Amino acid sequence: LASRAAGSESDLDPEAAALNERLVEWRRERAAADGVAAYTIAHNATLVEMARRRPTSLADLAAVKGFGAGRAERFAEELLPLLRGENG
Image (cartoon, rainbow, N blue to C red; front, side, top):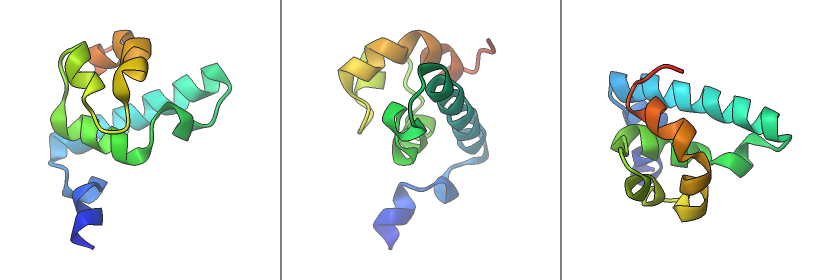
């Protein structure tokens, strides 16, 4: 049970929890634009890990478990500003 909690939204600090909500919204919009299911963009646990780690570079983004280099390259232009707290 503890291992599940470690990858859940419930253990995020308030800033990371707010970031996770923005990531979920981004994923919803990206999936709709691409005509795919949201989980094909990123799983919930991957978004939680992004919110927790707050990657700042393409390499950091690619290192997030469940994301990888291909997705990092595809989505970095959208995700890195969001992860830095920039709007737009």
